[in-house]
Image 1 (spheres, rainbow, N blue to C red):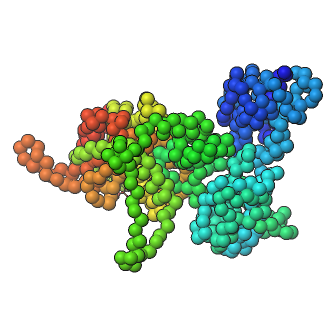
Image 2 (cartoon, helix red, strand yellow):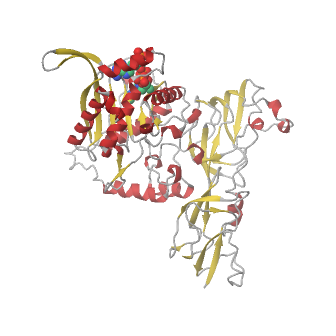
Image 3 (cartoon, protein in one colour):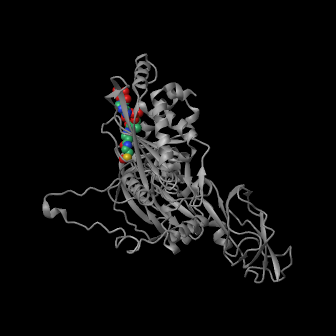
Length: 553
Ligand code: CAO
């Protein structure tokens, strides 16, 4: 029996790469090739496997440590030395720290340098539109790598750098971005297909070259087909992990759950849809424990048996052939709509909703707002006032600024006040988030919400701008209608619906006064919030909106 000193193997040109997951601890008995830790460079996620079976001793790293080739990880008190081990197993002559799978580990996880932009768009005419044949770019030493996700289909109109597909080798997950904007035609791949460098992906019709070809003399001799370099999954971390909101792919980029190969494999084995799992790792990365927690929570939930539901469960809506009743047209759902549909459905099914309504007297607020705008100041709509009032109410009723822990045993109270607001866009609903709204004045909130709403409508919101919300506001006041039942934007626990204000007669004790009344609809998660608590919250909101001086307190 010998101790094997395990060090970080050859990780290409990378140095000081942070450890983002540690999958073992001292005393763990592990198999050969078990993943010890995960590193994350700016391009790729790399797993370091154990070179042999054994018991972990003297673990030297923790999450956040930065490592390079040769950094010591731990010792393995090993019964079985790896095949590559030198015959004499002395401490210093212990087998090379490089894992048994040294060759692939050394080159495979090494992120591939980005192909120069000019080479990616050679097929498109200079500065103009044309067709680009997209192929799999240089993916290191890998061959026959399976496609695990396809994010486009024929006819999709995509932006440059939108993710076309995700590949998963046994060490790394790579996204293949589009080399140019255009319409996807002749998609030649499906999930499960195995690809290597040069495998045709699709044709991008009407592609617009990112940069004129003339700008890249190096690629002129024999231009290869378009082949964007793969990029690491984390480059487009999405809300699919903790979906505070449906997401707008940044500039047409696609959304995939952010997780490493081991986690993906584990989830696949259990049949877990990673899009439903909330990531607790850095930047929302889904780790193995998250998948385990998800499964535990699911198992703890009573199965919707026929008995428990009075013979019900959730019966499917039967398919109907509508064409038998008249002319029809089938229109594919936009990607954002599909994402928000799944998110809203989850929230609706998981959260016992109650909607509390009230009307706020905003007569003075409206007069102030209009006077400000008339004086040539920042244009103020009602929304920034509502955001401000909500932050004050959240401070007074902190349970509205919480989330239920995954195990349902506790609530997580947030000390920050990031407020999301639903924005209507041509592609569907998105929820940009105003960060630290409590620290901002009304004018700043007005400016930020206007900018975020514009970005949302232009499809330019970044994933980060839709994350971390504590509470959401859905304002339909500019459109019309009165009360409605907003769906709580899980994992938040409350959402405020605001409708169009109207002059109404309000009894002042002696006579009716014409007052501008704004309908408020507060939906909340009844697992976390009691009815009385919610009523107090909405009453306070009403007071804050009817008397602006209170907002300054
Ligand atoms: N009562 C009366 N008028 C209102 C009002 C209210 N509650 N809320 C807004 N208005 C007025 C505004 O003052 C503005 O009028 P003026 O130009 O005369 O000042 C006009 O309506 C248009 O406002 P707006 O809606 O464009 O601006 P906003 O800042 O209030 O809202 C935003 C911004 C992004 C929330 C909004 O544009 C939007 O997208 N709303 C839809 C949200 C949505 O879809 N929710 C449903 C989600 S669930 O499916």
